Image (tube, rainbow, N blue to C red; front, side, top):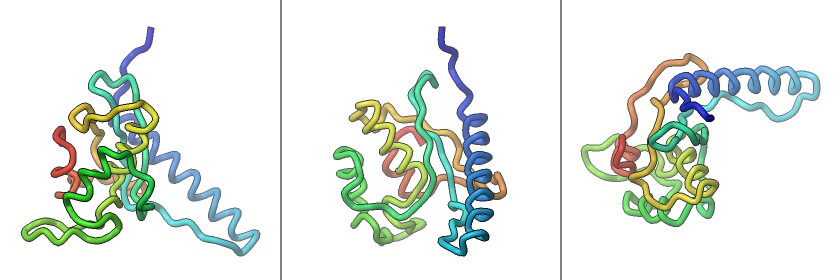
Length: 146
């Protein structure tokens, strides 16, 4: 029988994985003198209510055609994907850039989920420092459970 997981523990493990991959990439790049990969700003885990199914991702610039149709429709209510939101009185992050948005997109596509209210999240963590960061205004407006 499957046991539920702890989203915060899974997030810490994911951030440690990101750091390990970063070290390996830097080591390889020193040998070849090629592309350099830096740490992502944030990482997050999207999961179901019971904590049996999860998908993790990190913040990165969005590809406009990559989002699940329901999530894309909600993102477009904030403005153009890939551009900063211009809503007054809000922290205006780039729409579609957040780790939560990418993790939700992967979850929705792979788990055939079409309801944003069924998505739950770990805290947002900075992989390099393991610092917990508050959710941005864009994510709070998109996901009802934040």
